[in-house]
Image (tube, rainbow, N blue to C red; front, side, top):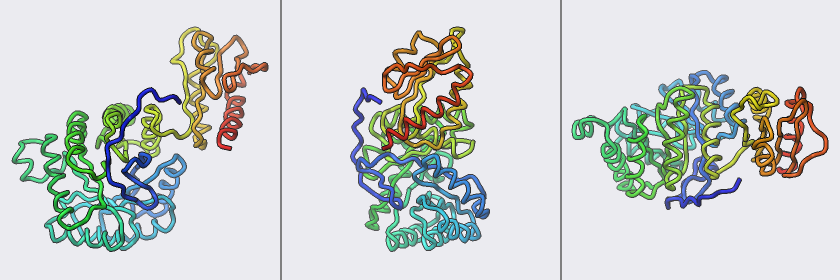
Length: 362
């Protein structure tokens, strides 16, 4: 996929979450978070496995109790992807999670308690050589900062973040990343823009509590893409009230559209009209579902008629142009002699795409 705009990434330090590099021009990683009960080991492991299949780089789990921490210890041994332990309020759960093999912690220092407790977490993280994310959210700002600003503002989020950054710095701990999230796109974007000029640590970006699948995808895409186009962001999470698998898919779609990072099939398909010679919508949906296992980046054009079909087909790895009863196939820009019967499009195209993906992978 040709990139028409060169995105200059903001300079940042490099940290590692397990074997995943973050910052300093490392590939932008795609994160998600389990929505299972962490105490349910089988379901949580299954969900992590499902997330791995769609390409997740890092998975976060909430640890709200000691029993959840004990479950985390077992889960960690059963999966391959790096795990982040999400901790609120009880610093002892952070210490347990570090002991049990967490690759990173996510804490909101504002609700952990006094500095002594935060320093205990930092010292334990130093000892195990794991990073921490300072996660500031507009919905959980410290009372003194809320009183000062009257409501969550970009300035309030940044002040909260900087207070914790300065404390981490005072303890000579630099292995951390920062997020300043809000469900309000404009608030979050402005906060990240301000923070990006103040620190060199990696930034984890996203629009928190974005909403259900459709609305949340739109909000997240606008906010995350706007920041990435400015070179802001080293790792992303799309927060949706949906199956976490959808978060990963949308995350990769955002990176793919921006020509930042590609994984899997990029379907180019027409919105359809009365000129379509076959059911384009059903065809694309069926192929997307059947080909989710393909990770090789590949462009597939499926156009219902000849109007834009030829032009798109010539630019794609495989292109299909709708025709009466039979449709024309292009491979690597070259028209193929044998046409595909319209009633066999899904079966034949799945076979052709798998062959082409295998060829590109090799």
